[in-house]
Length: 163
Image (cartoon, rainbow, N blue to C red; front, side):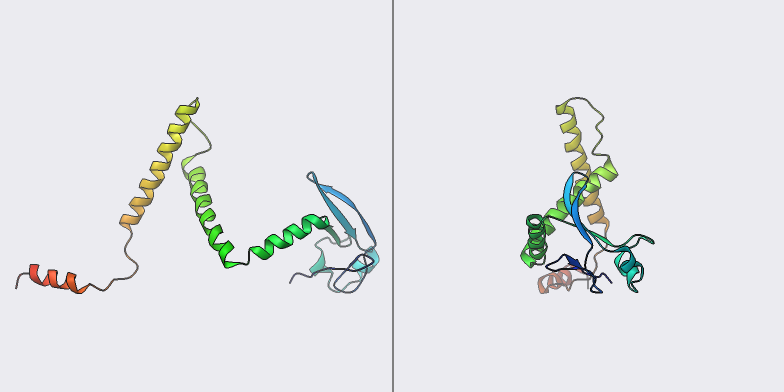
């Protein structure tokens, strides 16, 4: 269970109702955040502490995006719930899986040759090998369900079969 924090007029408020102690800028891997810290004594005595933080001795702390970036992130997450967005993303996911397969299985990131023309040729041949492997898998696979024979097919089989 993930507990959410509320933002009040005076700062962040933890799920148990305790206000934050301080706000300050924070930089993580070149990105700016707002760090919110809570009081150590209040956090240590909190009965739901393990749901809020994994640290055994430090109080809970939040790293929040600046408001414009947070609004963009919230809008993007809301868009991702849309079925039209999911249908568009399914196309991208298929392309990404093909690239990932070629990188992992067929060594697409490493080229054996020097020069753009030879590297391009290796990539084309790798793509062809991927397609041939997929075609072989498709041809050797057993059908999942048995389809009902059409009336025309049944008629043809009756005419061909010896009586």
